[in-house]
Image (cartoon, rainbow, N blue to C red; front, top):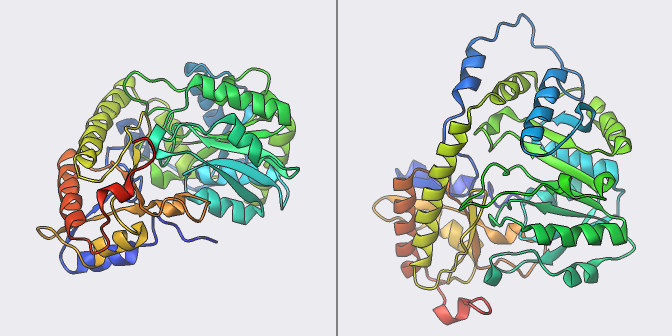
Length: 398
């Protein structure tokens, strides 16, 4: 089981805090925006004598509410197509364990959400990476690159859209190319769309559930964690129009009994979140993104594409080793008694030689904190003993 690049440096961050330093946490996608008031109000009105199990597939009332939410987002589903899970993590685990056998292979564009590696280990399957590059902003690799990875053991493709850790939003034509690949090779298409609400600069997401002709091949993973700033509620959803998949996944759901009752109460209340909430949150994230990305690109030797969605970016730094650099930032560096915690990007790749000089940054802090974090990084990159010359770090065609 691989260590989490997002959390493995926590002991160093705690030690830095013990020294009295301010640590700007850019390592983890924990938003500081407020959970919608409708959720907090619902909690205040909960009157239960017993916190009971729910059905294994989740509250029927919540699934009906989710079906309406998806319909409002031009995704038409029946209640039977939706299963409530303990976070998006469990949804993807159920998807892997339902659709795949030990030894099967799943192709995933890298860099990808680091925990996909862990879910694959838990399911006994093999991740086959196809590498997206920083020089084109981490766009979908060519179909020819996907085809070169296909073997008799290939059973599926997994994408995250908008992407964690890159913030890349796949274009319609990229998804249509994937559809043909899925059709031609009879593959599963797993899609993690938990950041659907966070698309910027006029961009709009296109769900794989709306790809015609592969309805029986598509399995969607969703979550309320980031959408409503409710990471601790641990409520997600597994969605598919394939009745066989949903029936098999239900057996996994029954084995773990039920998703969290209190989390479902909160999630159902969140469905009444007014549109103004998302308008304000998106405006805030665009401002944060601009501060972070523009600030990073103004540091000599740093390369950071401008993300179109989610609230992450990958930055390439003029350093020898991002793991060493991120630990050094917490262990040995301070600027005006401040430092920065980031996630080394090597943990977001399956290829062992990728991401060694990249970091994933979550721009989830308030704007002033982000400005100070960028200032810390600029100073740190001047002082870091393993700094490389600018020319050594350039990506191709940049």
